[in-house]
Length: 366
View (cartoon, one colour):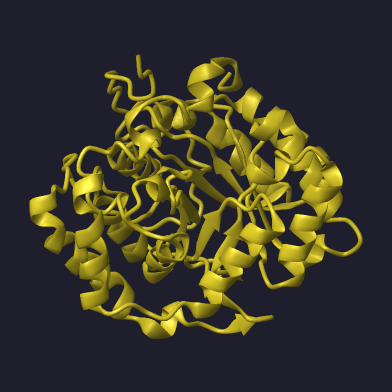
């Protein structure tokens, strides 16, 4: 049974439990969007929307470069990050820790500045290895992000401190709430004694600089997180979500969430561009095409799993060869993926609980 999306909908609109959470407040206009599947018959609509996002602003997509890697703005923060980000899960899987460190340092030396990680990845090994890789001056060259699972103030505070220790740093650039995949997750986080209190305190004390959230299940849950945050006068700095050639057709974050983030100048972190890696198994697209599609959206960075130097080369090649796609090119690409994408069978993170770490380990939530 898929336990990720709870049927419980405990609204907390208007709750004013914490007047101190007035962090860069903005005015939101939450929309009552419904979960809509884009079928093969409507792929042209998907193509048009994607093309508007991408090709309409080539100066943004082809921003300044650093060591050959395009650098993009992270929302309204004033930060610039590499267009390709290094996924944290995959650098904790090598049998030899030295290989992980080599991959991380090679990526940085070749222009990747955005480092993704999470408190629970590989039992903490991903953070530990990244912390060791960021010694010897490498920490100063990156924008470091990690995530926590805790939904209570106490659990979140403990996980924040553990991540700082593992990563061997006194400050994390972006800390995100991980796996916002249940309708009640926003309520728990913004409740009195919830995890937002720990995040705000960590920011106030200088342990973290920016706050965001991630999720892979359903765009409606993302919208609800933004709505509950707005009701509590809080605006996130970044949001992470699946953005790929099949998401455009099925339970689409691109169509339902991305416009909201762009309008509110929230940094867009794309993930699962290859469906980890089931989209490739559909035989409809290549890895480079997957990365180019995600780069063509108004993403601040596209986080991709890099578990070898060969895959690092592939990611760098995608960044090097990327050019804003025409509307016609987007339409053709989406036409090829429409039939395969229609039921979500190549986006298993949306349709099952295989990728829901907090569902398998509820104790992480607190």
